Each structure stands twice: as structure tokens, then as C-alpha cells.
Image: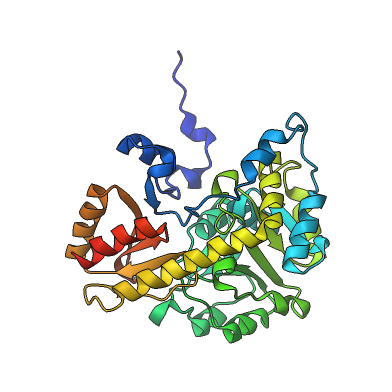
Length: 362
């Protein structure tokens, strides 16, 4: 075979780019530990360990239309989401998870070298998608207790600023952003994306602000509360004008039929879903109370389905060993601003007991 230098065909800025690294999949962990997938202790990706609505499997088995493309406008799904959220369906666009919707929004609004203001530590897809869409990420590190630095954010807004992104509650730290700070940012009249992927665990939303702020965009997800991360389903809430613009550029069948059905089933079965959410919240608070007085750690209150914990370097590596020996996967961080830390997804009561035992017996 004739050797061709393929490098010249790749965007020059991508050759040296270090991609976003996701955690190992459930299938990898299952295979490595030689245990059935439903028995793994996967507490590293904020998935809902309790899984989807019990009726989903039967709905998928009975469905007779998999040979057809879905409705490209997802009218029925948007209608049901609209009823759930309390807004008209023309304020909604659905996507294959939050990642696709973030990418679509940035693809829509960014000209080369336009700026996106970000507040790390936070969700890594914001930076990745900004770079891939030829924008410039302006990182304004969070301050004490991981609050956004509102003064620096406002001071860094200029004529190249296209979007300010705030994850609320923030991933991985779990804290909420002061509502008055969000209002001040909206008052700049720049586009503002509030990522509410964990809304169902916080019950705090900026949705009422949308009536007076057409520059507000809200991102929501089914992955966490509905337990369907593997099917990929999320939605944007925005002004009808912005929704129509996103509809222009989204792939016509970006959400598959199984994911659409899963969204409908989840919203029809909202009572049992809320019971699971409440169970996760109670477990979250139980772990927090069990760990908060342990002086080996700094644990932060959380409004998501996870907890963020800091520790020193020695204990950090010892914990990694202990979690690995107990076949428990958690997410590890080494931020310049926070040092060594880890994030634990809230699991079943039995899984959480193992976590508490490892932490308190260190």
C-alpha cells in the first residue's frame, strides 16, 4: 500500500488537540471485573443507578415502527415536555443528549474567534465544543465554595463575547449559582446558557426569567432523573426565534425512536420517577452527613445526584487504591484551583454503605 501523509488533511488546530476523555463505560467495567453489568458499582458518571421506568422495556418490545424514521420535529415529544415544564412547545428543541445541543448552539452562534465565557471547574463539553466550533473559551475560575466570579465575568465581557455558560447546579461541585448573579449576566444582553441537567435533583430553575429575557437559554436532560443516559435525550428551552434557528441546522432525525419513546414513557411515569429522585436525594444527604465531620475530607453540599469531595494527595491515592480493590468506580479530579478531589455518584443504599465505609475507615 502506498504511504500517504494523512496529517495534511486534518485541521491543523486538531492535530495537537487533546480530546475530552470520558470515564470507562459500564461495559468496560463489567468486562474488567468479570461481573454482570447490573451488578457493577459504577459511581463515576452521574448516571441514575436505578435505571429507567419499569414499563420502558415492554413499550419498546411492543413498538412496531422501528423501520421508520422518527418525526423530525418530534412534535409529540415536545408537546409532552412542554406540559411537564409549563411552556409552549415552540420554545423547545430536542437533541441526542445535552452534548449535541451544546454543540448545535455553538455551531449556530460562533464566528471564528468569538468568545465563550466559562467558569471552571465545570462540565468539560463546554470547552470542547467551543474549540471544535472555532470559538475561544475564556475561563474565569470559580472562587470560594465554587461560586462564579461575577465581577471578573462582567469585566471580561466585550464585543467578541457571544455566550456565557453556567452549569446550575454545577458539575462536578454540586453548588447553585446566585440568582442575582445570573440576572446581572442576563442584563449584559449577551446570550446566556444555563445548564440545568440536574434540575430534578435541585428543583431550582431560572425558567421564570425567560419571560423578560429573550437571551436566556436553558438546557435540560433526561439522562440523570429518567435513568436513560444510554439512550441520549435532552432539550433546549429558548425563545421561538432561537429554537427555529437551531431547528435549521440540527440533523433531521437526531433523536432515535427508542430515545423518543423513553422520554414519553418517563414523563408518563413521572410519579415513580419522582420517588426515585427523592430516594437519591435522601441517600445523598445521608452520605453527606456521614462524611462531613471527617477531618480528612472537605465535602460540599450538593444539589445534584453526586457529591464532590477534596482531600490531600496521600489520601487521594490511597482512596483510589481502596475504591479499585472494592471494584467501585468514582470520578477523580486534579484541578490546579482545587487540588486532589473526587466525585461520587449517588448509588443504591448498599453501594453508598460501601462508599461510607471506605471513606470513614481510611
